[in-house]
Length: 119
Image 1 (tube, rainbow, N blue to C red):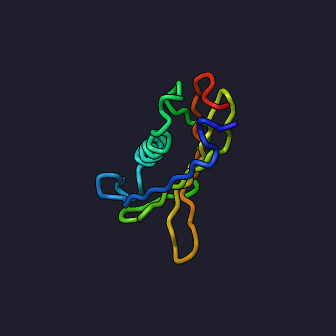
Image 2: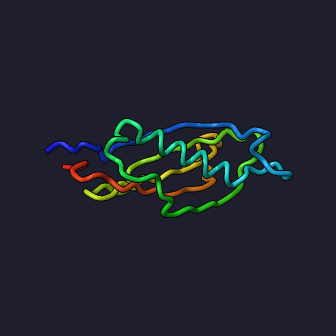
């Protein structure tokens, strides 16, 4: 049987924190971080948008540390749960420091699926 939505969907993106995205302490505003993650998740599911019933729902959010002006942040997502009713995607936001990942935050987003989206 072929799955209409693949459980192996993994995507990546990046952005650099700019002046209009920070507070007076030069730290990235939480709303900007959330909007970047949500936009990234929506882009990740774009190819099978016709199988999704709902807007993304934030299921879990862990902000671990601040990101600052001019930080280059990486976003990576992968499928955490896929069944007939629901698709859950995890997102990790991190800075690369040499060969290490310095995680800024991670989140779990959920989408309600249309019937028969997964065989």
